[in-house]
Image 1: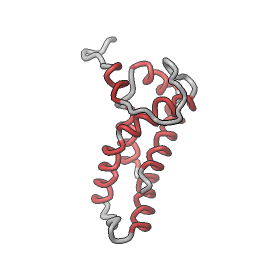
Image 2: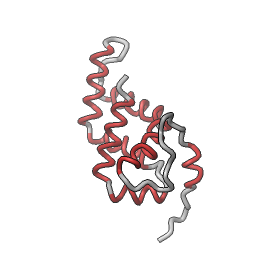
Image 3: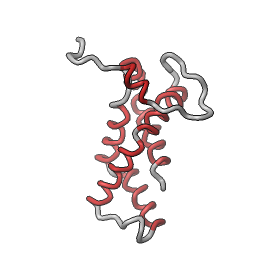
Length: 129
């Protein structure tokens, strides 16, 4: 069943930033590792400000210490929040999956558990600081 509002895949692709040292993209990567490097990493780079704001909001909701007070402790608690809070994890995955094109979404559906794990690992790495 076609969607009533077709997704502008070419616009989504044009928004993604280039990542230095990354191999030339395949038309539609099918291997999980290729998908991670060619699709997920650029999306996470594009969505970094959104992800950082989400983590900051969740940190406020859970009354975690400010990074200005004790940076090491705040970073540890934020990493734990991202690792254990199911609602935050689902939101992070949704922010990334919402940027997938139709063919990429088909690949995502085939490898959902593995790609969700990779999305969360990459997001945790990006949001460490």
